Length: 194
Image 1 (cartoon, rainbow, N blue to C red):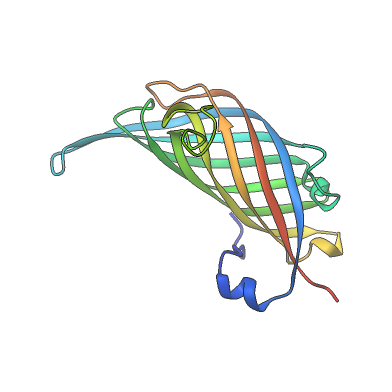
Image 2: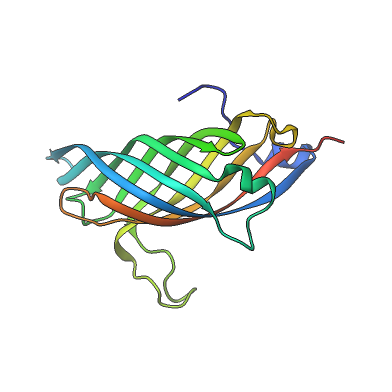
């Protein structure tokens, strides 16, 4: 991944700089390809884990009415060449994933990192309607954070992208693969130009 990406998650940065926000609301559709898997056993503490490496490639489509005009310049393709996940026991239990992305939009390119939890449901009772359970195989949830590194649109220069994704995939004992669908909700964080 190219160097030079940052994440605007520093409270001092947000407090001291004047920034503009633009909504990002995207639908994701594509595939998850299993590249490698390795089982591990540990005696102290006693555990068994499965580590997988996938290639994630999704088409990034607008989701009106929430997507902004500047956000439309990021319609395109998002690729994570090495999405690494460590699962408790096997691909059907709780996991943690991370990977570096390249987002090829129609008017900009962004790079950065995704990371989150796999096979867990956060949209559950008592805070939300019961649309998920705490164990939710086939779901990746997490945060995407990165920077616009190439654009011809002046308003996007020096902007960062941050948001939350939810991706549904076909789970399996081996870590899952096949078609994926998801959502991304976030913001473009851009410096004030005047």
